Amino acid sequence: MTKFLIKISFLSLILIVTSCGYNPMFTQKNYNFEVGEVIFNGEKEINKIIENKLNIIQKNKSVDKKRYNLNIFSEKKRNIVSKDSKGDPLKYEMIIAIEYKISNNEGILLEREIKKSNIYNNDNDLFELAQSEKIIMDNISGSLSDNIISSIINLYDN
Image (cartoon, rainbow, N blue to C red):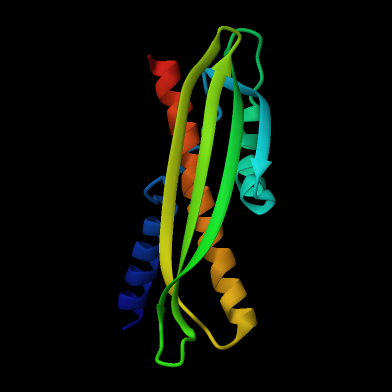
């Protein structure tokens, strides 16, 4: 039985040491472009999440890289999707929309608007509801910032 445990431990150690090599998508350090000036308007919380994601690229400064500037406007809406017989909300929909412009010294290169939404259940505990909404907002905003970064990458490739 002890030989079996030793073999299992050894196999587990090998699997842990030789993991798959997962790296988050936008954390590579060698971008061939940099993000210069970023102007934010709209929802402060959403803009902060996007700004944190863009800071990864903004730290990557060099003289010979293409420089892109961003102008981002964000907006958040919360709508009631369904109500119970008393008229109290059962489900909400959070819609986050961003409009962004990517420009360089020559002018505006890309102008785009993206909307993403999520439907979630109401919660009697207001604290739990606020926590759920924050998580949903963080996830949607993170996804939207990934779209902005992808747009810049696609611009550079062209």
